[in-house]
Each structure stands twice: as structure tokens, then as C-alpha cells.
Image (cartoon, rainbow, N blue to C red; front, top):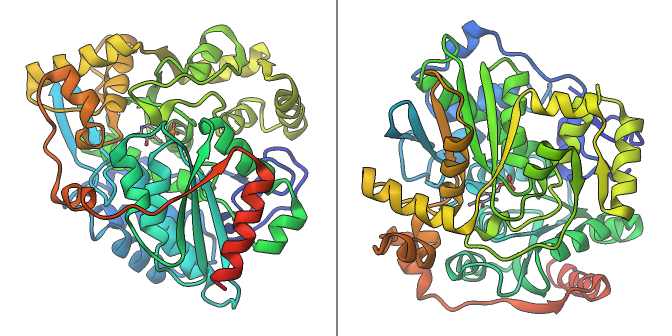
Amino acid sequence: MNYISTRGGAAPVGFLQALLAGLAPDGGLYVPQVWPRISPDEIAEYAGRPYAAVAADIFGRFVGDEIAPADLQSLCADAYADFDHPAVTPLVQTASGEFLLELFHGPTLAFKDVAMQILARLYEYALAPRSRTLTIVCATSGDTGGAAVEAFKGRANVRIVALFPEGRISEVQRRFMTTGAAANARAVAIGGDFDDCQAIVKALFSDAAFCREIDLSGVNSINIARIIAQCVYYFTAAVAVGAPDRTVQFAVPTGNFGDAFAGYVARRMGLPVDKITIATNSNDIIARALQTGTYQRGAATATQSPAMDIQVASNFERLYFECAGRDAAVTAAAFESFAESGVIDIPHNILAGMRDIFTGVAVSEAQTSATMALVWRETGEMMDPHTAVGVAGGRTARSPGCTPLIILSTAHAAKFPEAVLQATGVAATPPPSVVNRMSLPEHYDRLPADIEAVKTYLRAFAGQIE
Ligand SMILES: *Cc1c(COP(=O)(O)O)cnc(C)c1O
């Protein structure tokens, strides 16, 4: 299986190279040359199989002959062994025909663990034959950094640096990044918002000489392996409620559009997904784009769901490419001009393709709190604010009839205790892992939102950890 760039200006590469590169060298995002198809009979066979086995089967369709099936099975088994629920991503019913898909049973209590745990093992596998050490830099709106530090710490042939927007993430989020002491891991507070952090990472990647100098690699949701890892739970959840004999719909709390795009991929692979609701907080660029046809950057505002305080949804480029009939020239023109102007007027045919599956709903802060309170009263389920955005959006856009609605629950309530307490009047009970984390000393550095300062820092770190 080869991977091509959404901008058409990069040579096709194999899975492991796409994995290690993150972003394509022409600034585009890697997508497989063709989306693999899974037949209804094969989907039916997923019923009752362990999560790791389904993950290995789905990855197997994307890796070509670069990883032997037995190796893939053991990498997946290892990645999901420490999740604190035997189903890895269990479903919980919240209303008639409505389910929460709990994606927060990994080590840092957010859905980022599901992809990052397998990604780190794939990196180690890919790098084992080499003698060089790679530097992974990721921008985080809160949860990616912790998941990445946790997954990559202590692993051979990699260093990991997480850039987070100072003061814009929860204390629990920060502590997952700053208390996992390991020689090969660093957390850096950037004086700016998430979009500044993401812009710095993009600028680093567009500097070819610097990329070579410190052997830079990216694990943000632009990394195609994360998207593949996230497809898996769409399949296991849909099968658990009756797919492939029954159609399902999903609602996804959305920031960078990686998780929601994985749902699109699952559908392209043959899963009977009837619709996906993209639920945003007041940083609603994606919801507005779907409603109005204009994709326009604004200023990010801080909300109680900080992992979604994002104005530029990187993975949107992948959807654009697909809905433009995989026309790389059209996609490159749109996103190169977006980098300058901050706006794309989505042509009708492309917008129609997006609306065929996605509905966008922006959820206010008041609605988010009210939803946390309502679900707590009705069911005793405690939700984090990101999940509440998903529930509110999913309920608003739900199609009539009896198609089950599965809402992605992206974080544990205890990761955002202030918001949960304020909405429900009850403190979320933290799992033991969080309690321990809260008392460990924190280690992190501070830098201005300045590309040169970050380069100097990375050079020094690369020099320390050869
Ligand atoms: C990252 C994150 C999201 C948004 O996911 P995207 O793939 O960026 O759309 C939602 N909720 C939580 C808790 C997150 O950490």
C-alpha cells in the first residue's frame, strides 16, 4: 500500500515512511492510494473479537507487506493490554438507542491514548533497524501531549517534545505531560494559544534543512497512522449495536477533525455509517464551514472544552481532497491560499460531498454545562465537557427513526474536574492513576511563541540525548 499527498507534490511512500514523516514534504497530508474495503461478512466477524485483534486486522489492510501479521498482532496486543477496561473502548447506554463510546480507559484518560499507544510501538518497530534517533515534536491542545509523552517515554531511538499553550489547558492535562519524568521526554509551555503551537510545528516541518538536522517527526492528528488507529473503534462500536445489518450514526466532539475524519474513513471502508455529527464548542470553524460553505479562520476563544479550542482543523484538508474527487491540484490551491488569506469558499460540488455524511453543530458553553447536568441527573453518568459537546450536538442533529446514535466520549470526567463540579455539583472521582499524578513534582520549560526560540531549544535537546 502506498501513500500519496493531498497536494500531489510528493512521491508516493510506504506505510512506515508515511508514519515517520507525519506531514508530506509538499505540506500536504498523506492518504492511502486507495481506501481498503472490508466486506459486510468480514465486518460481521468482528463481533465478539478482542479489540486488539480487530485493530491488527484493520491495520493489516493499511501496512502492505511492511509489517508481518504476527508482529502487528503482538504490537496491538501490547498497546491495549494496559487499558483499564477489558473491552478497551466500552459502550455505555445513556438513552433509548443512544450510547457513549468510552475512549478514555488508557493511561492519560483521553481518547488520544488509543492511537498514541499503538503509534509509539509502530515507531519503535520502524526505527529498530536504524541507528539514528528521531525527534518528535507535537503541538497539543491538552491531551495529545500527555498521551504522546506517556506512550513514547523511555522508548528507543526517539525523543519527544510536547508544546502546549501556557495557561490554556487543565491542571490534570498538564500534569500528565509534566510528571512523567523520562530522559527522552520534554514538555514546553508556549506563550500563546494552540494555533500558535500548531503554527510553530508546521513551520518547523516546512524547514527542510532543520528537519534533516534534528531528524524531525510528527505525531499530531495529521499522522495517518493515528487516523487508522481511530477507525478501529468505529467498527467495534458499530458491530456491538448491530452493524453491518444495521446502520449507525455517530456524533463526535471535534477540534482538529482527526477523530471525525476517522469515522469518514470507516464509512469509506464499508461500515454502514448513515451520518456523523461534528459537534464543536464556540470555536466552530468546521460547523460553520458545513453550514455556510465558507471555511474561515477566526481567533480561538478559551472554553471549558480546551482540547477543541482550535480554529484551523488540520484534517479538514483530507476531507476536502476526498470530496474534490481526490484532485490534488484543487486541494493544494485551496489550502495554499488558505495559509495566506485564512478563508476558503468551498465549491458546491465539494460541499455537497461533505454534507452527504457530515452535519455541523456548534454547542455553547451554557448548553455544554446543561448537558453535563442533565445526563448526570437522568442516568448517573458523569461526562467531561468535551463529551457533553458531543451529546448536545448529537441530540440536536439526530435523524428521526431508530438508527442507533453512538457519541464518542473523548475524556474521563476527572480530567476536567472544575467544569464537571460546576455543572453537576458533584466532584468526579479520579482513578488512582490521577491521584498519584497530582502529587508528583512537575518538570517543564517555557518559551515564547517564536519559531527561532523553539529551534534553539530543540537543537540543545537533540545534543543532550543522542
Ligand atoms: C483532541 C480531543 C478532541 C478533539 O479531537 P480531534 O481529533 O482533534 O477533532 C476532543 N476531545 C478531547 C478530550 C480531546 O482530547
